Length: 96
Image (cartoon, rainbow, N blue to C red; front, top):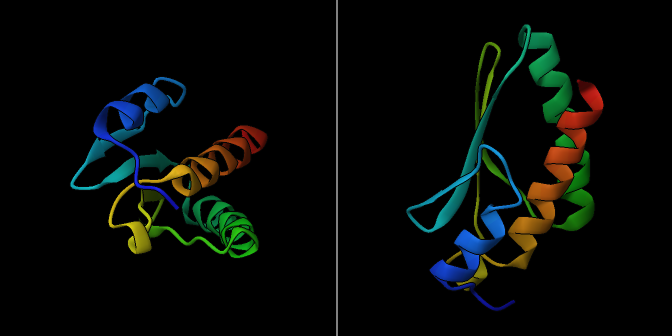
């Protein structure tokens, strides 16, 4: 998988509200009503991430979920990261 240039990353981020690029990864965060809702979404994301064989670096505190995506094999951001980001966005939209 080819590592994207910073320009390519920023162009692709135009299609993703709330996502940023820093330190070799794309990042976002979400806030939910409570821990149960946050954990439910994390579980849905986990199943999709496993299906894509691409796993997020994430953290959860109560109703907050922070996600960072990068492709370790490419030492940066690739199309795999944007594919998983789109899946995450679709999951978030379907819960709203």
